[in-house]
Image (cartoon, rainbow, N blue to C red; front, side, top):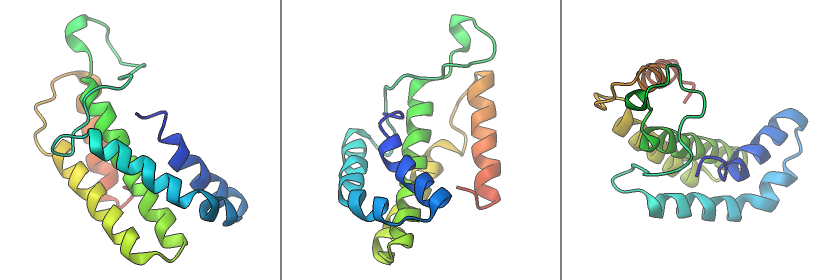
Length: 136
């Protein structure tokens, strides 16, 4: 799921780098559909599956970051990016909807998520820090 979200993130990054809004305009409706596709796979805002954490510190089989944590974090990032895109395109109702979705997803994984692996705990703490700073 997370690699597919590049379809949402890359147009935003290109706009931020070059200021050309046409890429957002051209792909906005398909970007919305992709986020809906991801959302249809979520159960209570949580995705189960994906590729997981490729760079986990440690290594024992019992220390693996749950795939649902990394997939759900990717879902939250995609919703955040969609909120930004919608704002840029002056689609303020959509922007608010995606911001609320992103917050709802973050609320699912930031409070006591029961995560016990080193990387997952660090990720949860990092998400909490970025959220508190308004970066997410």
